[in-house]
Length: 198
Image: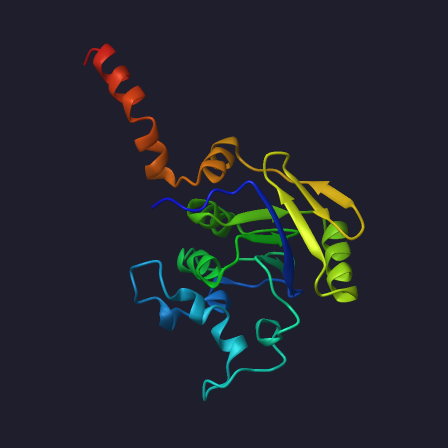
């Protein structure tokens, strides 16, 4: 399944300065029954967003109307815990296209890259600057430049580079998942197969 191409994203951000956010907090296990990648955004951070009677918890950031945008800024060690890919699906389905943290669990990072969510890992110092910028102005914007692998706080002009695997970067720029990538080079594969004896 192809996803939106990711090039340069400029957006305000939603701050979640909590460390060690695990995949069960991102999407509780009771919501994992569906097999399609749809509807999971409704239950993103379900137990943090809603009371037991399904009324919104006013103090939780996703229920605060002053925060919005396509970028989620999390604390250190975001996406730890189980390997469920549904956590990345929930982040994407809610509308986030980028998650920023000072450290990601490897499996969560991979699951995000597979579905079109860019995990941007920054230094703890730069993450702190982002949180402070959002605290000063909830509408402050970040620029995520994938071609240059750079994140910038537009209000201050401060920026930092981030790493990404070349293969995954190419897929994100083209809006490909792994199957789309293979389909895109199908002719090359067929040509190689024809020229290579069994």
